[in-house]
Image (cartoon, rainbow over all chains, first blue to last red; front, side, top):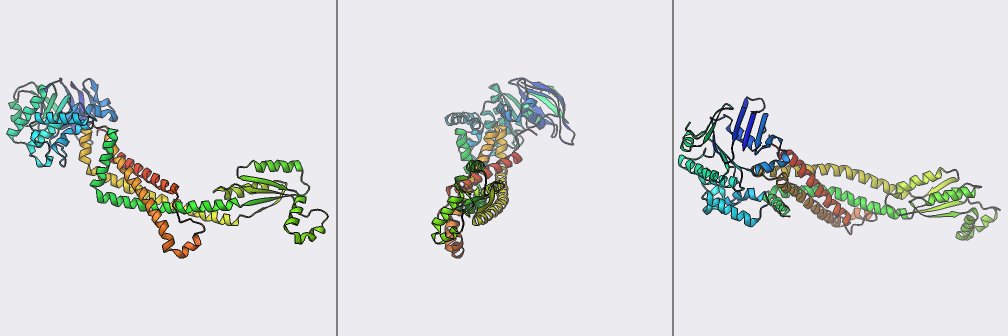
Amino acid sequence: MIQFFHVYKQYFRSNEALSDINLSIERGEFVFLTGASGAGKSTLLKLIYKEEEPSKGQILIDSVNSTLIPPARLYRLRRQIGIVFQDFKLLMNRTVHENVAIPLLVRGDRKAAVEKKVNSTLALVGLSHRKRYLTSHISGGEQQRVAIARAVIGNPKILIADEPTGNLDTELSIEVIRIFEKINASGITTIIATHDLNLINLFPKRIIKLDKGQLVLDRASEAV
Amino acid sequence: MKFMLRAVQQALTNILRNKSVNFLCLGIIAFTLLVPGIFSFISFHLDRYISRLSENIEAIFYIRDNSDSAAIEKLLQRIEGNLLVKEVGFTSRDRARLNFAREFPELEYILAEFSDSPFPASIDVKFRSDARSVVQIESFSRDIEKSSLVESVQLNMDWARKIAMIKKFASFAGMFLSAILLIVSIFIIFNVVKINIFYRKDEINILRLVGATDWYIKTPFLLEGLILGSLGGLLAGGLLLLTIKAFPVYAGFVFNIVKQLIDFRQLPLKIFWELLITGSAIGLLSAFMSLRRFIKTSPG
């Protein structure tokens, strides 16, 4: 469960990126986080995986106050959260397999277990045939799926995706959201930041809308 | 174990990935460590030379006439108790006369003119061989000389004093130059690790976000510094050996002068270890400094 209590975020000498955010996301929920560019979507996501600290307020992840987690223990939180970035953040000089295996390798998992998990995760995103390809040699849509596979391979409790369809055409975008639905069906809380209203309309999920750093809409499964 | 193996593998990959920068760095570290190595080598041999000289250093403390025998005994005990002293002997006035007569029988007639022994009693001291003892012997002798029983002291250590001064100067110059060059080495490794951190910036960021611990990220860089430093130290040892072997061949005229002081046949293992440990330490230190400066681990 993710809870925000009167959360504010202000960057140095700028307007508030987020202002008095109060929200609660239950375990296993699928949420679209929407709003125009600069509305504060990415900032809100960064606060969840603690890439940023709130200027004010409290954030609870599974009842743990994330603002109190010391840097040396941050890895424990990060292992519970899978992140898909808009720019994918893949290592282009490594193979698909190597990229997907990273979260398991940093945990010190055994080679055989890593191999097995990578295979099943690549099958989930439909990329088994690209396993030995260099990431730079596959298409943008496939790179997106590698990023998703890397985010879910460690069995996270929460999956966060920041504009995951930003670089994809409509057909591929729908395909990607379907993959997220499949992942969400296994009980992983899924939060997707997107400004693509057409896409949101296609999938009846909870919507949280931000505007200029303020939460302006929070409603379940209706078209905006 | 698995973690360390991965870290070593990663460190070696980093080094090989930026071959040119890392090999250049290695060469510079080796040359900067070579200079302290040369000074350490000279200093080592000067110490040994001084030590050999010290073995022959003797002090003779001449005792005033009519001194109290109990006081002399006390002084003897005091001298004997000093750690620098190997052997102490007391020569009475009569004994000194006999010694003179034995050593210079042709001059015995001179002694006949004296009813009493013309020689003062003395305490003869032999010192232990110790590399640092020259200064200590002087200080010890001055201390004993202050005793009211002692009339004068005879201490022949001019050569040892001169060599000690040369050694002191060599040590000082060596330390000064070494300090500068070690700072240069630290700066170089610091920057090489920095380049590697920037080269792998994206990967580091990904590792952080997928839940890698600080040490998982940092250890390969620390090992990289350690490997570069220790390899630099080893290379410096090799270069020093080469320099030592080449010196008598290419600088024969100087060699004749210094060969009595310095043994060019072998490189003491102690210096080799010193170079290796110094190299490793500066490698580790500069990598650590670079990591502290350039790897952000806490949220912004």
